[in-house]
Image 1 (cartoon, rainbow, N blue to C red):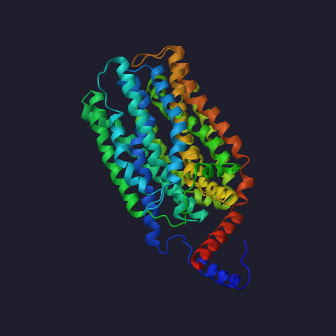
Image 2: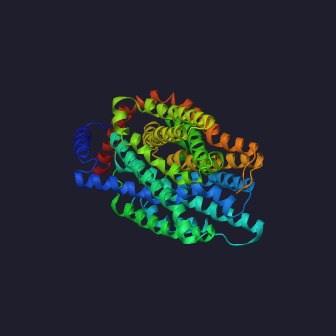
Image 3: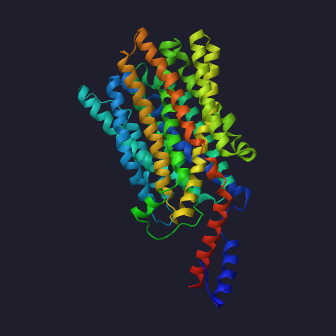
Length: 480
């Protein structure tokens, strides 16, 4: 785009001035640290509720609320079908949001209380009869899941607005993953103990009393993130139509890779952790290790904290693929530990799985912001809401649903009966669900990532051209 005659020098001067004033990372160490810790808080808040759902809802449905494994699996899958609709709808809503707080940030304020309310209701167990139980479970979980998309997607979409610096985005993603692991650790170290303490042998009562505690923490942490985070990357103020939002998806190669890989990753990860209680209780006969095993998710920080360094010394594609293939190897170690009866090898495989999957989990959240830049560079449309809603929230929830539903159906097919010694067929189903189903999905997740490098090489060019476009747009706006 050019400006002729005398206006050309005027606009050029304006561009230089505007480039100097373009938003960048915060100017002080204090503001930078505040932003990083506040971004961490947003993830801790979400995990206090969602972690209980991811790790324990399937077993809660079958062993506490008395719903069959097949029915529980169907509820989880039903929710994922609904997510196929609500995730893109949320994304379009986010892209059309204009407020004095920005596009993503206000949703922390608006949805924190509704989300936590239905998070609590999901673990309330009214005696409605068997059909009533299924209906109640479906309604509360579906609603909670819809609201989680509404409040979790902005945690991802706001990243592209917090800074234009791709390295700082990796650092912020590292802080976010740290928050995720802190939230998961808090839940896994406390939830079952608190349920036992407050329930006094009645797990229904225990969950009903414990979940409001987590809900209060969730609301406070989201409000902290709302207060301190600021969207500094300029957003197009014009109203983005649905058709325009879809244009940002068309031909967006990096986003398609993220979508395909993330979907298989979350199926694998959730299948692994949701069947862990069955695996440790019935296969290893070590029910006491359930909380310990799931708490070991915290060790993934050992790899996540090195993520910015790893991405500097090698490509993000290489780090990403290594995490996924390492997750497959960890499942193989877990199998050999189970086959040989070696608990140390089992725990070694379990720990290795968290270390490897931590990297594979973190990278997509970072590169999603890069795919938003790619979509803007190619189409001129910055549809951060839609791209992250489908690329992150939908994949997370669809993967969570399938990762819970598939093992549930496998258990039902293998004649699983809760709270009794399991048959050989049932034990085989538990082992397959916890070991080989995740291994297969991790391997499938690695395949599309092999093609990501070609897009990663374009990032410096894309960043520079977008910077020039924004400067020119600001200059033209100020000159009119």
